[in-house]
Amino acid sequence: MLECRGVTVRFGGLTAVKDMSLRVERGTIHSLIGPNGAGKTTLFNAITRLVDIQEGDIVLDGRSLAGERADAVIRRGVVRTFQNLQLSPFQTVRDNIMAGLTHLWKGGIFAAMAGAHRTFQKEAEDKARAAAELFGIQNRLGSLAGGLPYGILKKVELARALAAEPSILLLDEPAAGLNNDETAELDETLSLLKARGLTILLVEHDMSLVMRISDSVTVMDFGRLIAGGRPAEVAANPDVIKVYLGDDHGA
Image (cartoon, rainbow, N blue to C red; front, side, top):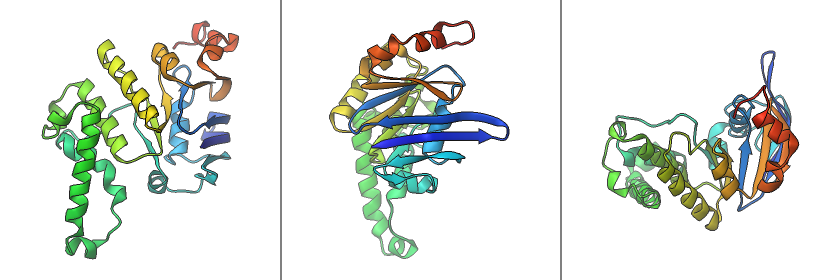
């Protein structure tokens, strides 16, 4: 479904990602792991066209993403979350979720003047409620985001991404800052989304979560691919063990 083919990203004289390749199969959970600074988020940024690639290609369903704008990538079904929450604290949970649906509006100013926006607004509210119900936050839709606990805000961001109707969902450290119960809920939700046919590319440092839910795991270090395969295969790989337990790295 999604392929990175020899992707290289440079910032001036710094090479953040070097000749990186991976393939995410449709309907699977594929985890991308590695120590801090390995280039995982930079690769996410390249896939979603927030940064340019200098070499290689990124292909979704046989068509390149490399020349697309970020908004066009979203319209092609690639939706992501971020390490740091990207929510408006002064808007309600409903409005924050609905903000992820603006790319679905096909009308212009004349359509809005004719009242078509009211139909779109109702559809967007329905989608926001459905996404909120999946994460158990439907009773928070009218609450301002700024007054909510961190664990709830994580669910709001995930609900916003899901409401955007992705074909592939890129999650950047969704378990960061969650307690054990919240992580267990995330585990169940991601498994449910996979069962519904959603493809997920996951960056995560919680290795127990990664090993439980992943169909495939790719490991990066210093911007390069060092291992890939089934979770058990990757966990037993000497190069991976060295990256996580060696003197020069930290998980």
